Image (cartoon, rainbow, N blue to C red; front, side, top):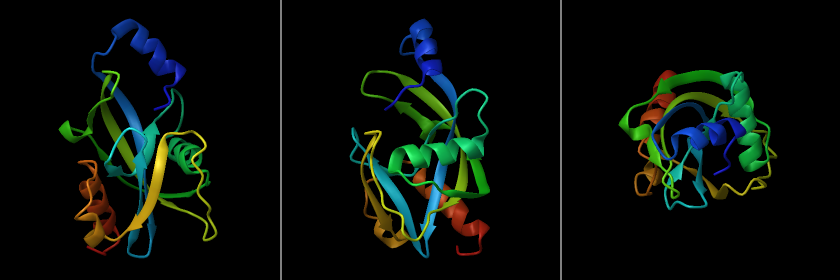
Length: 156
């Protein structure tokens, strides 16, 4: 997990205590398949995303996160929704606790996209249908966001 200077500065003051942080997540589709990723320190699959930097527009943040994490610049589309709650509380291996409020955006990748994991956060990506997802270990918020994405375009 790459930590921004902003969060590092907060952590110097509050230690591992719970922080409320704004975030973004990318819902990337190709037909009936969704692109999910697995982070270095987790066996669970999730959407690509991360924290919004101070002063950064959420749509710009989701584009930056996708580029940083898979090496592909996405076209950012409509906002799917804003999410929070118990499913978005994360405790990292170092003990840091975060409660994210995440804004989900539909994102599109070029047809010839080639993935790279330059920032070292991700170890694997894959395209999955909802049926295939049902048997995967995944982050608790994944189903909620993907259901909303499907409902918004009439696919649910």
